[in-house]
Image (cartoon, rainbow, N blue to C red; front, side, top):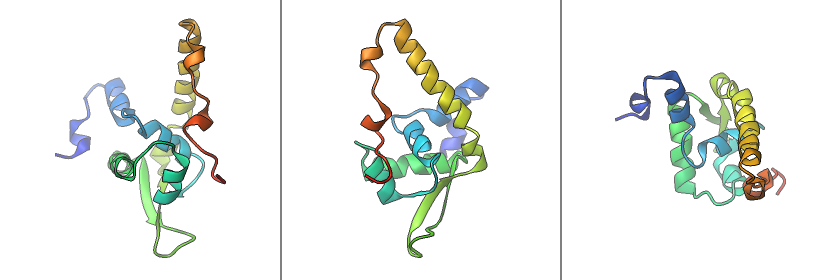
Length: 125
């Protein structure tokens, strides 16, 4: 069964279904900076295995958030980039990050927040 067929009918649940998972929001966040090859994504996202990365990219592709294209650098390579639908998540992801910080502050748990670079490395790293 395709992933898309398993999405809930309620719009808010559908949105959460597309974004749910340990790595999808992180992958989308990295791709907001531009196209990336699998090896680049693996280097940039601390702790993700290649198997999980590929699974998450396939799910995001099925949801219409990302697409594959031939690499501009290597004619044999493939890179992933956001579709216009994926790019439309930019303000949503930014709002979720702000809300996550607000939530931690309200519960006196700011000490548990991680800086972005704890999970996502700069592209030059």
